[in-house]
Length: 132
Length: 54
Image (cartoon, rainbow over all chains, first blue to last red; front, side):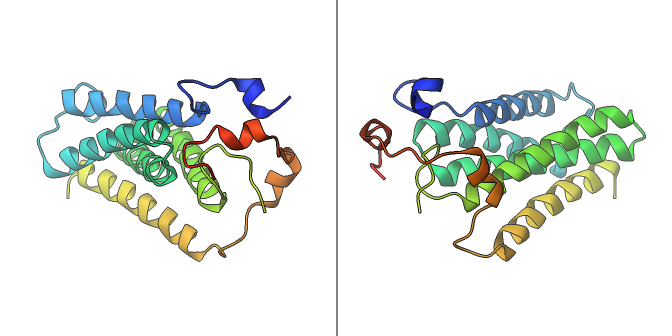
């Protein structure tokens, strides 16, 4: 049984579960940042807007990376996901919020940062078996 | 600088640090543990499913 048999094909593309999860997390974070309803609060200063733009770009790039089978889009989406969650975790830490809430953001940094580095060291198209 | 400024700078620093790690990793190499967890699959079906045909 091939890997494709095991996980199936969605719209002609191999499913990317982690990219989907990261895309959804970036989307949620973008909604919270643009709406000013999350721990970040008011979003009218330049760094808040920059973080919201980065979260939005991450979600769009991850979705486009899967839809277009573009490894470059996926890599940049993962990198931005790690960056925006690092900012969120750092903010919660700085303002003295709950440690475990900040740690939850840092887990996304580790996961997305690791996924980015693994994508960078892989060969072939996204999801393809590695060949030498 | 406000708390948000510092937080955003941490995010930017993480972004740049990951780019730096990627830059410093030797090219043409991959993580050894990947070989331990996957097996080669050379079926035609596997090769034909990707748009770019690679």
